[in-house]
Length: 192
Image (tube, rainbow, N blue to C red):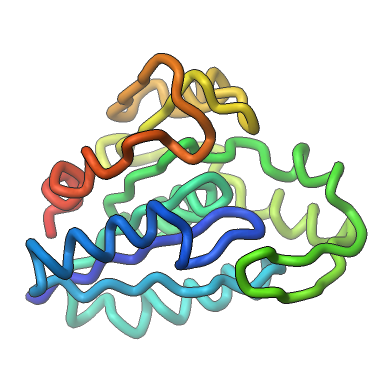
């Protein structure tokens, strides 16, 4: 079966983010056989989960699928992995984004897409509903963490994903410094 790589960006980010572009560029150059889908995710959790459900169901019978997600995209990737038993790589993933995003309630603008939207309490509840409370297939997840992440406490991910493959690097930041070292290994892990 042909291979599909889905890349999920983080909160107020886009497929134009550096890591998304690095994954796309790597596949273009070294693995042009892999179809890469890096969507601009809807800003609201229920719409994003519905979109991702449709995306997986559109491709799952015809493609071998692997998922990469960063930050909030990592949270969504864990949900997709659990729901569809897909391999996923989580890069500095958000573990409890519904706690963090309370500080962002109100008007928002995505700096990449320019979209204006309003984050409300119901969206926090929608996000909470997507939490994976019990990881049934830990071997499907590889979590990449940098201790210098200034946005998320990497120790939350260490606890949550303790039984998964973990790569923990000193220093770094939320964007995950020098991510370009990883695409080849990520593709290998995803089995693409």
